[in-house]
Image 1 (spheres, helix red, strand yellow):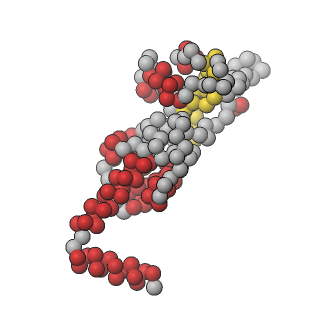
Image 2 (tube, one colour):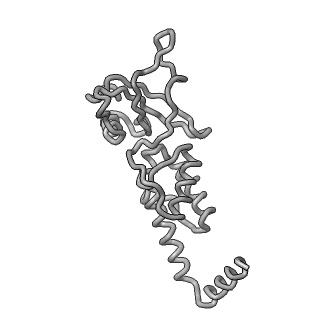
Image 3 (tube, rainbow, N blue to C red):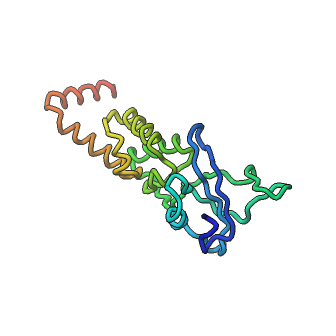
Length: 190
């Protein structure tokens, strides 16, 4: 299906396991025009018109040629590992909360992502969403439902949700609780 895209001369799709137990499809593309290869969103959209979502590669890597072994078959070992994000966004984290969530993504996917990349387009699934929320809850001591990943599937969106939840929890504290927290913070600094 990937090779039927008009901007693709040749293609291969393989299963890649960046993190043990987390398998995802990676599309390797030899573009017709090396100077203007089709983007990941365009390729995923093309594949999605005829394939179910689970069969659409979650990452696309542009290469010069499909490597073949001595028997003329695909040489999987010669393919580069996906060390980049399928989307074009490379926006770096813009604050502590985004940095910490980005670190959790790196642990999950084994690659760095921009803050506007979609969790599910990067290769996320419902199991990884649960692991991400558990990591966020441990990192920030906030309770977020798993649906938050589906509603705000970017690092930036999740950071906003975490910050909103922290502000809401602070607003719910009584004056006595705030005074106790300030005292505790001063003691920790001393």
